[in-house]
Image (cartoon, rainbow, N blue to C red; front, side, top):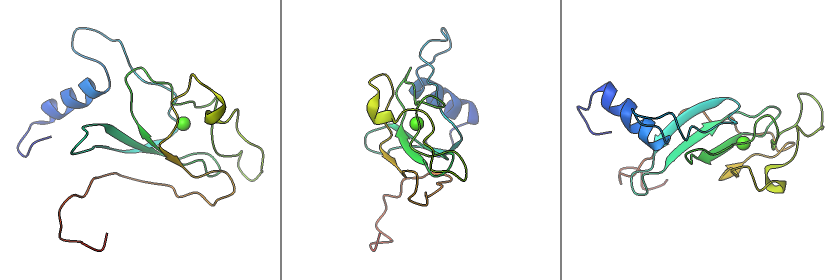
Amino acid sequence: MQPGASISTAACSVGYLWGRDSTSQRGGDQGHRNAQGMAVHPETHELWQSEHGEEDGDELNVIEAGGNYGWPVTHTGCEYNTDTPVGDRPQERDDIVKPVYFWECGTGGFPPAGMTFYHADRSTEW
Ligand SMILES: [Ca+2]
């Protein structure tokens, strides 16, 4: 999104990245549990997304048009207050888009919130 762009321009951009346009309803993705944030990578123009899992199972995903992100069939977390996995693991299924990164059940998770890509050089320690 460029500075000064309207909300409708931003919505169209996200809609395009999501695989939809104004003339069709094809290509929507599915299987997200609890989306928290989204950001467009400034170099690759991929749409990244963060989401909360159940007990751990938090994820970072790169959105693909028409992709199935697994919930509730696959998950990397567990049922609340148990060590019981929720469904299959995404790694076991070829029909599920695997998360780029996830916090497996038992790791304590890392519930990500909003997303942004920082690409300036003012915080060189990062
Ligand atoms: Ca997932």
